[in-house]
Length: 446
Image (cartoon, rainbow, N blue to C red):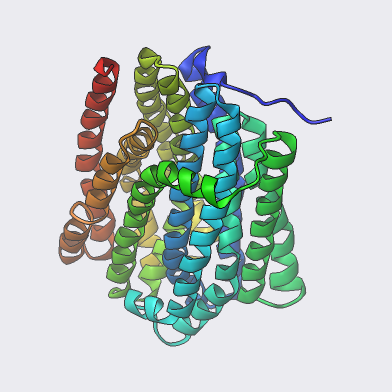
C-alpha cells in the first residue's frame, strides 16, 4: 500500500513554523552529509601528510562546481513541481518529475565527462602542484563518475521538499551520510586505502541517495509518468527557464571559490590546508542556512501558485529573522570552541592563525551569505531566476575577486577571508531590497 500524495502543505499554518520544521529536517540531513566530509578530512589529517589535506581542498573546489550544477538542476525540478502542486495539477507534477530525471541525468553526464577529462588542468589552474596535484587528480578520478546519480538524487530531494515531506528529504541525505560514515574508517584505515578509500566511500553514498530518491518519489509518492520525446521537449521549456539561470547562478559560486583557493595557494600549502578546514567547518556550522535556501523556495512557490502574496512576504521576513538568530548562536559556539577545532585537525601555526580569524569574527559575515541564499531561492521560485543569476554572478565576481585581491595584498591569507566577507555584505543588502520589490510587483500583477 502506497503513501498518499502530501499535497500543498504550505498554504496554511504559520510560515515561520514551516520554515523551522523543514529547515530543521533538511539541516539534519545536510549536517550528516557535510559532517562526513569533515570527518573525511579529519581521518586524512591523521595520516600526517599535509599534502593530502591540501589535495582535498583543491579537489573540493572542483567538486563544488559539479555540486553547484546539481543544486541548480534540483532547484528547477523542485520549483516547477512545487508550483504544479500549489495549483493542484498532480498529473503535470508527475510529468515534470519524469522529464526532470531525463534532463538532469543527461546534462550531468556531459558535464561530468568534461570535468573528468580536464581535471588535471583544472587543478593546475587552481595552483595544485607536485604530490598535492597527483593526490587531487586521483581523488577526483574516482569520485566524479558518481556525480550524475547524485544530481538525480538531489533533484528527487527537491520534489520531496516541494511536497512538504520533511522526513523524506531528511532521510535522502541521511542515508548517504550514514553509508559514508560507516565505510570511511573501514576503507581508509582497516583496508589501508587512505585517500582512495575516502573517495570510494563517497561514491557508494551517492548511489545510496540516488536509489532512495527514486524509490521515494516514484514508488511511494506515485509521481510516475513515462517520459516521451514530446513531454520532455515540452517540459524542457518550463524546466530550462528556471534551470539555466539557476545553474548559472550556482556555477558562479565556484568561480569565486576557485579564485579564493588560487589566492590562498600563493601563501603555501598550510594556507590551502587551513582554508580547506574552514570550508568544511563552515558547511557544517552553517548547515541551517544551506538547508534554508532549499526550503524557502517551495514554500513561496506553493503560495505563489495559490496567489497568497501576504504569505510570500512572510517567507522573506521570517527567513531573514531565522538567518539572524541562527548565525548569532553558531558564531558564538565557533568562537568558544576555536582551540578545540585547531587541536582536532592538528593545524599548523599558519593554518591555525587562519582558523582563528574565521572563528573570532569573519564567520559573522555568514549572516549576509544567509540573506543571499534566501533571496536567490525566492527569485528562482517566483519567476525571476535571471535576478538570482545576476546577483550570484555579481557576488562571485565583482564582489569577490577584487575584494579578495585587495585583502590578499593588505592582510595576506587572513585578508582574503575578510575581503570575501565584505563583498558578501554589499550584495546581500542589494538582493534583499530587490526581492521585496519583486514580491510587490507580483502582488499587483493580474
